Length: 132
Image 1 (cartoon, rainbow, N blue to C red):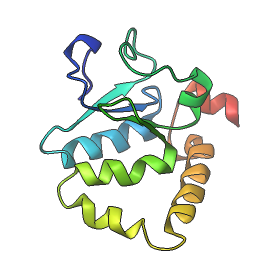
Image 2 (image 1 turned 60 degrees about the vertical axis):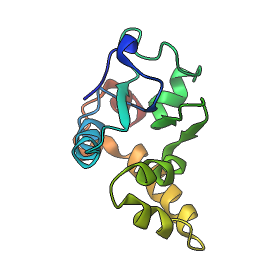
Image 3 (image 1 turned 45 degrees about the vertical axis):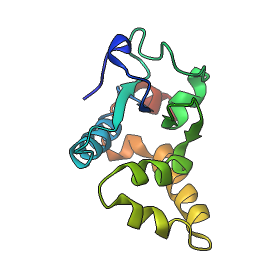
Image 4 (image 1 turned 120 degrees about the vertical axis):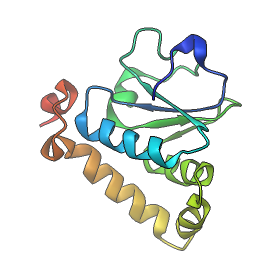
């Protein structure tokens, strides 16, 4: 599901915590949904995994997923939901829901709660263990 840096075709890249079982499960679900393979999934811990992508501080990568567009534009955490959904079959319908008043704020709050508590969701990552 993830590609080596040399295999990347400068498409859409979702950077996630590859040490986190919860994050990996979410990425697997997205990968199954992404039937047209529009996303490349890259764990930030991989050697040379981020080569060719915009520089993002490691502490930011540890806190949230990041979506990088082909032009280098970057979305962090819940802000990545809408562009990711628009890439997936029928995902545009869900992305439209995020444009409803208050939906983006609600999604951001839920994302932050889940991200802070992913160790309780079976994460197993040393990053999460340190954050407890």
